[in-house]
Image 1 (tube, one colour):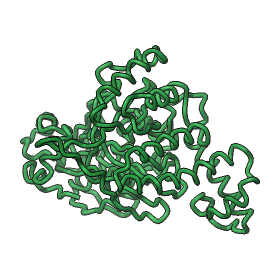
Image 2 (tube, one colour):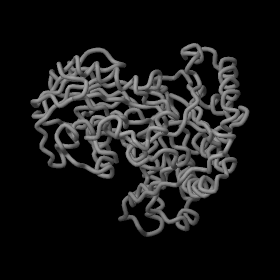
Image 3 (spheres, helix red, strand yellow):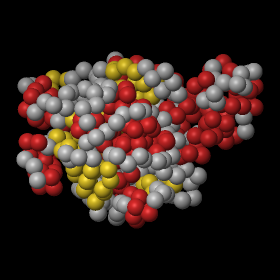
Length: 454
């Protein structure tokens, strides 16, 4: 990971061409956020550092990270920017580009886990009256402090900071919560000279999500954000924590320019909140664990931790008939998705985008039929993407209860595909489409890089 002490120009060095290609974050965005923080802190802009924490997509490996499965992910050229300076004392002062109010607390305060979780990005806490009155968006900053404290790190420096996300992408299923958590961790660590590794920060952000906020997710999101490299597919075994970077398909030469073989489409549904009629994310996790418990018990391994990754494929095949239908569907999704990841990595490494795309679409179908994570508008959007010109494959992004779908598309047909999706979704889901900004209803993106401090 790049050093947090390098200035803007040297930090970008070899990455400058990539930044130009990605168009995010731009130098203008850096200048604006540095100016804002400098005014908040009464400091010079040269004192302001910026955390770049990208959003992630998961082409293959949906809903299996919490069971110790193998997943794939990559970042995109959109995400969270957190400008900050050390406060000079223990105080933390934060403003947000998306939310009202300000957050204030001290790194001397010992943080306690929250107990009420709504969805995956909206977290309200119980505790002292001071905490109850505070803007709930500050929970991620407090969670980062909690994670660092819980592992024995002593912080003396607070931060003065301004945080903002890419416009219209909050609650979109792109792991914005993990990107925020990672951003605060990197800022606190930089301010307090804590040289923690990306793999250590994966664990710290897991503590933010699992222990502090109470969400029962795995480590896919933060792993992708912290480990990814420009254009590579990040593969992680969520049981062993081993990971590797799989290089992208080869570039194609067009005259004097190098054009990527693919683009990434983000198609938005207009749903910002999870549907209340859906049992939700945590129930699915519990069902997977119950399926694992029954399979392990049937094979005489009842004492093993009930995770589907602890169930051998031969055991699953032998005993899957003993699972009731709902649990059987959850287990089928896990084992079939693991196989899709394996095949997808091979297709990606060899540049077979058509094969890679078909696996993505199959993942999307299994998420609907076996994991039962979709809702009407998102399923409609998924089906529209599959018919769009040049699309290799598509699936939900995130849990599938709100947000967007992702698709890999032939770069030369991306604009035409985006127009097709917008027009068709407007016809099929006019109420949801009316909630979208026409300019950003379908975005054409490129691959991103890892989270870093600049």
